[in-house]
Amino acid sequence: MTRKKTRIRGLDGLRTLALTGVLLYHAFPRFMPGGFFGVVIFFVISGFLTAYASVSRGRMGVLPYYRRRLVRLYPALVLVIFITVEFLALADKFRLINAHEEVASILLGFNNYWQISKQADYFANLSNTSAFTHLWYIAVLIQFELIWPWLYLAGRRSGRGATLLAGLTVISLLIMPIRALFTQASQTVLYYSTDTRIHALLIGALLGWKTAERKQTKKRMKPLPALLFGLVYIIVTVILFLKVSGTDPSVCRYGLVLYALFTAMMLWSCVNSGNLGRLLDLPLFQKVSSFSYEMYLWQYPVLFLCSLKGWTAWWMYVLQIIVIIILSIWTHVFVEHLQRRLIH
Image 1 (tube, rainbow, N blue to C red):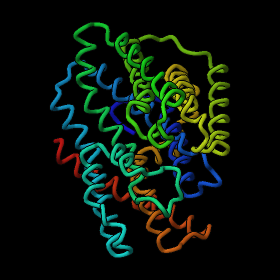
Image 2 (image 1 turned 30 degrees about the vertical axis):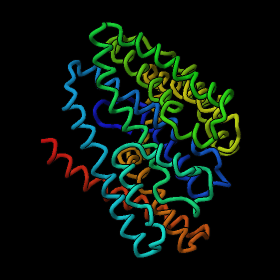
Image 3 (image 1 turned 120 degrees about the vertical axis):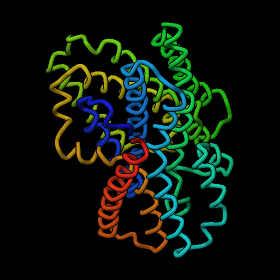
């Protein structure tokens, strides 16, 4: 969900597709049981842009990098947590019993493992979970951001950055299937653990690194194959969103890994085909993409708080989505102003 550093055509459409899947999964899990695949798209894009920006920039200072990522991720995150906790205190204080532990795990970047320790189930009914269940994703992202500058520097100094990334990517692709087939790890552990989910970030990073190294190359995909592949990707994604359940063992055995590879192929097609990229850069998608991070943060707390009140009629969900959009735009504008002041 990193954005605005570099203009890559097609990313706005992919972000919008991912956000739609995740939002509808949280709001209507029976209607869209596979919307969680949208998180894979976010991971691949995040890894891609992180590597692309780093390689394009050239030099990297570790502390300045951490500062930029801190300023990018935390203001909106802290704001959403603070407001949500205040509303929970009014709506149901019982839900705040372990709030200090949970909030600490979010801010310190290990919420995914905190949820594992509490035997949380991402695929449980919304009303039985925390308002911050979805923030396991932010924890994995933060952990990746912590190791990335060291990984990048090792690659640059060795002169074999892409090769190093390729090796790590291959290893990471094998971890989830191996653990799913040969260990007793639960579906929740497999879904939340950083070692089983980092493959999507590394795939994106490898693609971003290679793209930055050859960005002056004018070679492009032919329009028709690229457009056909884009159409196939969207159709398959919609089918996965509508038909696949997170409780299906095949999701962790091979589904998430294969979809990450499939998404990387789609991203590669966008990068190398101007026509496909432009098709996915509709003004509406650009607008949604501009505050996709804030929408990801707000969607679960709003839906969770409304579920506590029993506001579950379909038209109430429509109102909740409108509220999520309004809060996201407000948060984006407020935090963008704050970030400009912090960075400059």
